[in-house]
Structure formats: C-alpha cells, structure tokens
Image 1: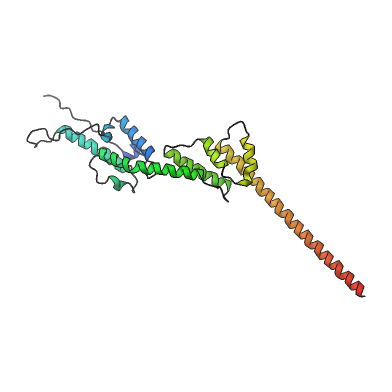
Image 2: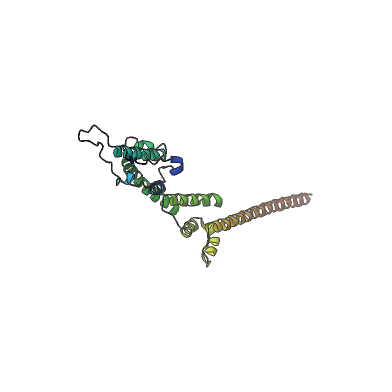
Length: 243
C-alpha cells in the first residue's frame, strides 16, 4: 500500500512568534517581525500572495475537496489567526472581514503605512520645535529621548548627534554659556553626558539664584535698619532742638 503524503501544517503561537502587538505607531517594526517570522517558517508566501491556493476540488464534478487545498486553507487560517492575535484591540476590526492572510496583510499595509508616515513627520516636527520653556532639564531631556525612541520604533531613527543639536538649540538663553562651551569641544558629546552636564549647570544656576536672593534680603534688611536708625536720629535731634 503506497504511503500518503500528508501536508505538514505549521502552527503559530502568537505570544511566542509575534510578541510585538501592532498599534497605530509601530507598523514598520511589527511588519518586520511578521516577515522575519514567516520567512523562518517558510510561510512568507501566504501573506505576499505567492503561495496561491490549489484547486479546491479534485474532480470535475466538484464534489471532492482537494486535500492540498484543505492543507493550504488550514495553514492560511492559522497565519491569519496569528496576525489577528498580534493586533491591538483598536486595529483588530480592520481585518475582521478578510478571508485570507494575504487579504489581511494588504489591508493592514494600506491602512497603517500611511498612518506610520504621518506619525514620523509629526514626531520630527515635534523634535525640532520642542522648547524647554520652564521645564526642568531632567523632564525636558526625558521627553526629547522619548520622541527619539518613538522615531526609532517607526524605523526613522535620529542619530545621537542630531538629538544633541536639537536639544542645544531649544534650551533657552540662560543656557547659552554652557552651550557655547560645549560647542567648541573637539569630541562629540553623548546624550547621557549632556544630561549630566546640563543638570549640573541647572543646579549651579539655582544655587546662584538662591545666593542672589539671600543677598537681596540681607541688603533690604540692612537698608530698613539704616532707614529706621536715621529716622530715630532725626526724631531725637528734632526733640532736642525744641527743648
């Protein structure tokens, strides 16, 4: 009796194979995850459309289902289920009505790619126009780093040197002395080193401001004492003159 060649079905466990969930802001990295996983499992053709469905029926009367089609359909639905499980709740409705993994891939690529490009433009604009204003150095630096991290996640990374330049130009006039000193350095300053230098400078300015405030209080108190003494002497002199 001849052996029957049963097609092998590859099962996917979404938390293991596709741990990164697709959101409105990370399509490029999520897309890379899915492609890499399916390439490793030799299943990429199911989403690109190159692995087409075999003929559904194996007889001319169209009464017997082709086993090859059944195997293809099962594998396709497993991939579709894994993709659906790797989407955030907000994006799951986007592919709720599709029939195949290829349809899901096309719809997600169409709807999310444009959103991703728009987000990159928005993040770059924010990075270039994010003045420190009255925020602390630590708060400001953390926000700038978060924007850069979001750009990296969208596969549009900003170099550390460019990030430092964006920070330099938006600190405010009070930081001009330290910025001027850093710009003449021969070595490029890293983000973490810049954070430490600016934090130290911020502390120094606060100390100087506190010292200046104390000096002003002392000066005012001295002036009040002088004025009080002068008034007392004037009043004493006037009384003596009347006597």
